[in-house]
Amino acid sequence: MENVVAIDGPGGAGKSTIARLLAQKLNYLHLDTGAMYRAVTLAALRENIDFNQQEKLIELARKIDISFDQKGEIFLDGENVSEEIRKAEVNKHVSQTAAVKGVRDVLVKKQQQLARNNKVVMDGRDITTVVLPEADHKFFLTASLEERARRRYQEVRSKNKDADFEKIKESIARRDKMDSEREHSPLKKAEDAVLVDTTNLSIDEVLAKMIEIIEGEVQ
Ligand code: DC
Image (cartoon, rainbow, N blue to C red):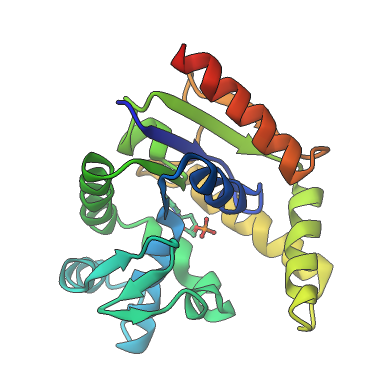
């Protein structure tokens, strides 16, 4: 599958930042699939849906319209929700939404369709394994839990918001566990994905490394 870069990895590994910058460099569309699971979660919160009611979540995922613009901003039924999907209440429930097979089926179909119609850098948890296993370029980005928590902590602090490092670390560890141990499409490295450990690398270094690999694969 040409013109497709697929990136997986745990939360806080830098996937979204790297995917966005890589997409800018290549002039591809950036599709953050985590944002899609977040959009369904936000819609469920707005409709007061109980997260144990899987059928309701699936029905909702089918009903709502999720779209991206060229800048990678995400829209829920036409409304830009890029900020709102990052709030704590969404963080708290999104792994539950992402564990529901029917919700995944709806979103995976949409992701595959978007990759057929656009040049894309797509990041998530199951992109290299389930959504686009035929992608030309596949990466697994990771970093130590400590480093991922430190990055999230700094991100929150940079917005002048209060943050508790230990709480952030716990929350990331909890989501790691749910994402890797769930029954449907758990997070795991595809055998043929290139592993990039970003723990001791700057954003520019990660980007340079990935571009070098992509260019090598194209020749
Ligand atoms: O990357 P993120 O934190 O925005 O992801 C939000 C949640 O969605 C997280 O629990 C993992 C899940 N997810 C998934 O199951 N599959 C994807 N392709 C992307 C995200």
